[in-house]
Length: 93
Image (cartoon, rainbow, N blue to C red; front, side):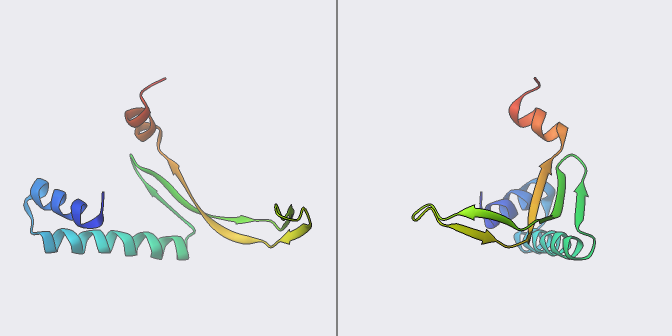
């Protein structure tokens, strides 16, 4: 589903214009980015947790040559879905 499809769905469901729905989606995106930069995590109830995670430097192998290479430390993004989201998508186990 694309952003414009989501905006169309929201405009129909909530009763707002497509422009307002697109603005709301853009604001949500900027909120997620801002909070991840500032706090490092953002929890949305019923959806899950977005987190910044630092990885340590490690040794790896070049698959073409087999030569060892050093993989530097970096920051990655991680999303952990909420239990309710997992249960509703995958079914309760």
